[in-house]
Length: 181
Image: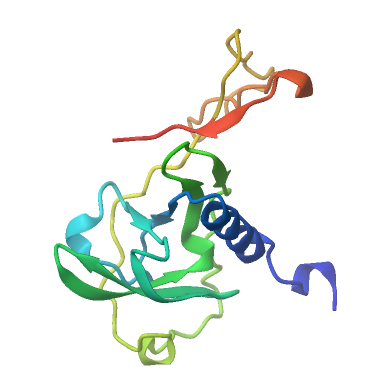
């Protein structure tokens, strides 16, 4: 097995942060970038993402697998089946203190030479409808210390993206997720 054939570390890190949250008495939340494979209540999706409470008190039958996260949850008093591909998880964090981990955007799957997938072959087995036309926003790493992080010296890419900020030295590094309301 080559390195490129090995599994992503993302599902293992998700499980580790989840266990840490539960052991600390904190509430684990997932930030999911929604696409056609995500099965979640459409009315709670905002800007192409949904934030899900995956704490033991909020879910039933939670399975944190290597490819899919599955559980049942109540939304407005109505029980719903939730199905999330692990590669669509953008972050997992504790609601109470914001500590957790964000993940890089998943690269889109190549479309050349791929056959269409019958949605009944996916866990949950129901068609998910068309993909959103709007590109969902990404998460941004925010560094907090006494001084503002310097901009990297690399020039912006042709795609109009801003340069990545240079993090403070390791002794002063305290990264966290920026909560968006």
